Image: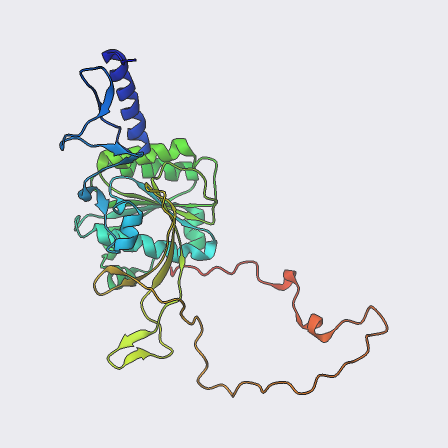
Length: 335
């Protein structure tokens, strides 16, 4: 049955409003002469096929890794909320380093503009602040370009980030949240996403040690630290050295819904990513001063079982209990 003009306009208006909130573009429909609904095919219109919007290449921040950009449907959206997730507290340094790498790519187009980093006092007390000298050396970001806003409560941090996201005076806004607070729900993230869309600026949501809760962010990247390879020299890899910073990246959510796992290295000289394809890298190099490995054991002798159950084996006594392990093992960012 043919759809009336009023009903068609109403449906299209609702689709546009929903798409504006969720970060996708509505499907353009027009009625044919027979009254049926067909997809528009003119080049000046945006078509949605299989739920994905065909957007221009300028709408995405390209990471420079073709396989990653293709899996994300073109790259990270420039005017949107993007979630960078660290599953554990010890991943805070890797999450922050990856976010600053993305900001370095953003600053190629928006040179001279500052970046605002919003977080609660708990976040900065737990993970610390980025090292000022490292900002310029690794990412090409001047220390005075990175502004910090420490809020006493999460509600205040959300309000500051929401107001900052609507401003075009910032090249990007970073909001760092710890855990899975109830206030960081779909409503709050939709507001952040809408503000970033209207301003045409990226808003990066960094999450520490939280669950992968539903958010309005079109992209969720799960980041952790990867083992650094050896430093490259003219004579080859330098044994025992530490090379470029590396990140292990998993796509948790994207416009294409395609899974993927990547190991990326950040080149501080060229300010660009490079994908590492080798299977493994030694985390701890072999000691150059240690003695030879212990020889293989000799004959194995069978001893009778202890008479009393109270007697325990030496191996069991040597193992510390769970209560003896330190409660906090995560490294902190340099203050």
